[in-house]
Image (tube, rainbow over all chains, first blue to last red; front, top):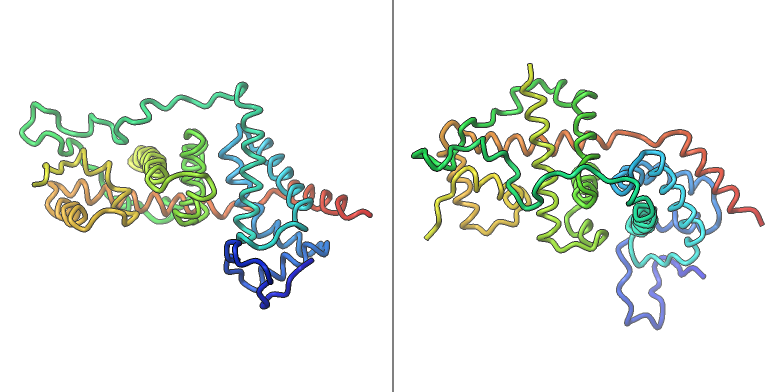
Length: 226
Length: 82
């Protein structure tokens, strides 16, 4: 049964403290548990699109990603009665999502190889951009990057530019993809991403670094074309 | 004693810098390099990274396909039958 919002429950001293929950979120959970359709719609509206974007980073196609989101919401419907607010609703939803996505991703792993992307430990900027050892200033830029803010704002945020970024992200190795989607698209903080994906802070940062560097590289090529 | 921080090395530390996880001394050295880097190549690189993050954030606008939204509602109604 549901506890009231304010009263601490007896006998729970050894359990982790309840995550701070905005009242509106608790109310939403209660309404979901009561089978309120409007509450379900609200959750779908609030979290459906981010869940789909994350699902896309685990599976090979948009269609399969939509199935993953379907699976996840079925899991939500069967599991909501057991949701006790020990994590935020958002964290709980995304954990179900990643579990469904991983199951599906493993199932289709053999049929859908993603493109190999060179040395996973190598430099993130083409070594030819820097002066080589024969030069007095070896290691400095041979062709320095130019500022992006010389590019008009409309072009920077145009649909075509966003499409290029989406395409680059879609071609990243899966964990890099999940990290950049959560951090830079959805705006999660580093600890939240580490927790959800089971990564160390350092590992999360390396994955983010490689993912961002690749997007930057593709943007640079695209934006420097006239 | 710091080893020379050249541009090739700096670009690999840019995420540590932007994430704020760089120790103070490293950070000072990083920022010092940005100011003195010939042609401001590294300052421009950092600026490109910041704008890359902004453009990536613009993907957030994409909404849920209506077919999926309807499918989820159907699933919800199915789950509520006694």
